[in-house]
Length: 332
Image (cartoon, rainbow, N blue to C red):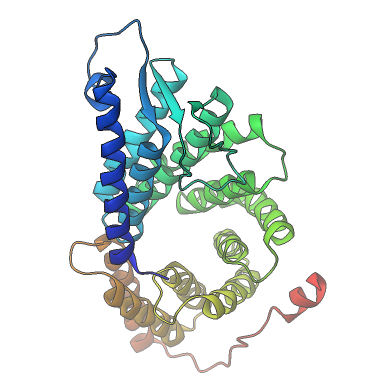
């Protein structure tokens, strides 16, 4: 719903509960995990941490990311990744008590019994952590770092899951999106096409996950100068999103920008400028100064270019806003 302030408060409460869990662990003679992980000394006995603590940190980091507080989100996601990597190296045991975390049960099978989380489950948690950190790096325009994280998540999932499983399509989608931003569109396209196919089967054609896949595919097509197909994809994506999200939801911004980019490439400079103005209005509705500033800079730069192009060369052609009907007929 885009209510990041309210979600932030809820996760702060969850963090308090998680700290109480760690305090009980300390009373039982278990050393403080975060302090010990930052030292070079090793202990014969593995450290321990409850999965609820990891989930609370990761959940809070995601709220910070979506709320535009990217640098704080990055630091917390890196902390979660460090914990999980330590668990894989056997320096740390992750216990699963009577808690259910933020992770989807489609991705990780969690039990309510008090037990040590197995390595195969740690891998799937680690894949999610890589994905979340990759999304944070992407928002910070650190595309090389983002790609490495998404690639790491994909490698884990390919070894653990079926090729057509939803988490693999998620990794393909994020890898494709990052490759597009690195102007490697030809490599991105097959990954994106697979993600669209799987997400259509898994979620249906009215789900935001499918819409995101369409958005990435539009960027792939735009990158290889197939603007007509790119426009079909982004228009369909926006129709889905506008039916699901509120009119000023922050999730609309990247898709509105993508539509503006396609229109600009086709010479519809005024229509492109309208998209950029809409993206700017949504951004200022959702974020204050200091939150997601890089996105606002990108929007303003695009708006300036489109406005200058409009003043130099008008375009009065009529554009079909519903060109993807043939796709819908094909999909049933």
